[in-house]
Length: 143
Image (tube, rainbow, N blue to C red; front, top):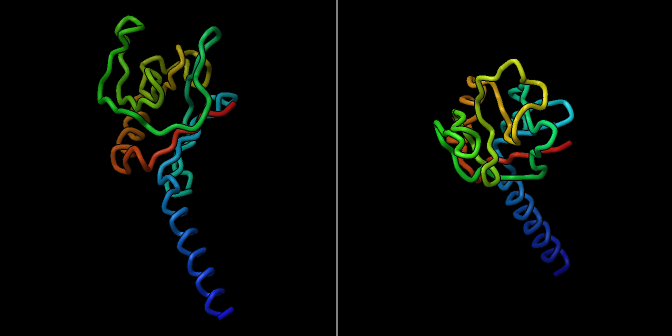
């Protein structure tokens, strides 16, 4: 009886552990505000590390753990003079990871709160999100 119970508990814990492993995000974008970098991991392996620009003085890039909520191949900011936002991956309201043509500012805080990337890098990230899906993507913004 004890042996049967132990085997049942062991089997249940293995099933629980495998279900948790299945929940791990296939794609993770870690945005470090202090270093102005975005590190992209695919199934736990770092595949890219890019310079970004996040919120400049007077603005905020929201910190936290998010999933994408929408993507737009080309978006224009209605709030900021129709500024182009190619390959946008929105993660909280109007905040997105997107390409920019202000490449000289990458690596320094320069945005109104979005995470700006070199447009080619934004296209790569956008494609990866589309491939793995919103539910398998995590966006983590830390100080």
